[in-house]
Image (cartoon, rainbow, N blue to C red):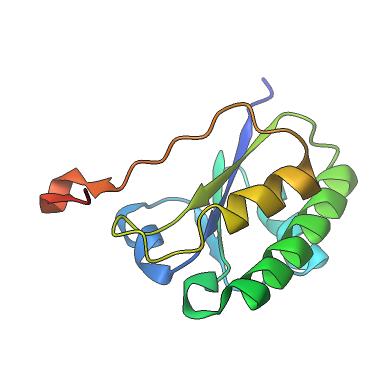
Length: 127
C-alpha cells in the first residue's frame, strides 16, 4: 500500500464541509477522536472548530487545543506526511490571520498561505 498525504482541514464553520463527500467530519477534536479520523482511509479529514462564532481570544484558545491534540494524534498514528488547511469564510468573517498564526506556531512553519476570499460557484467575490 502506498502512503498518501493526510489532509486535515480545520473548518471554522459547518458550511465549509457541505461541499465535500466521502470523508469524515469530526465534531470533536480530542486526541482519541482525531486519531480515529486520521486512521480512516480517506485522504482528507474535516475538523469542525466552529471558531467563527467565537471572539478572537476564544478562537485562539480552541485552535491551540486542536493543534496540540492533532500533533499527539499524528504521532500516535505514525503519520509524518500531512497538510493542515485552515478553511474560513469567503466574506472574511473568520479570524484571519489569528488562526493561521496559531497553526504555524503549534504545527510548524507554513509552506504556503493562500487567502482566497471567493466562492466562485456561488458568484461571490469579496473585494
